[in-house]
Image (cartoon, rainbow, N blue to C red; front, side, top):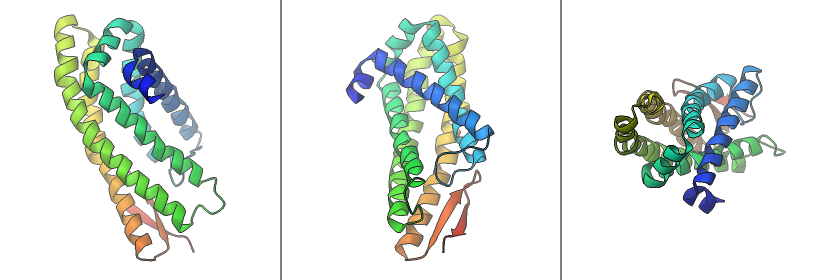
Length: 209
């Protein structure tokens, strides 16, 4: 599947359509107070997914509007492929959070360690790769395309990268990494506690026993 996604524009379109509908579904459920990832709140999920939903909506609209241009943009820009692959990898963390809520003892030490180790590593790679590739995608992909076509959709993507992507990676995701590191520190010290991430980046200790 990865090679299909990486080398094929059809796989790339599938990736964006999948995340487009995934974000819509998750946001609608969050508005109904239904959240599947363990210890996530509707506010956290909406904050996390709203920017991604807008960004993927712009790309999905462009893919439908001019699939040939968008496909060429993907094939010729390694930065966009790396950004997409990094975002796709972060879904592993969300899957593990969902699975944690299904195990007999979600508060078990092993479950907490798996969630926070994978979360810290996965989010860290997305911060580094996502921030760098967003800038490269704007400079080497979107801006030349806008100069050539004058498309407002392309300009909207540039604005999305600057206004949404960079703050999301450098501010909001950093708070998640801090939360994961704090949880791991407490677990390694033999303390029984877990943390709920909040938008400000602070963490609230929750007694489990």
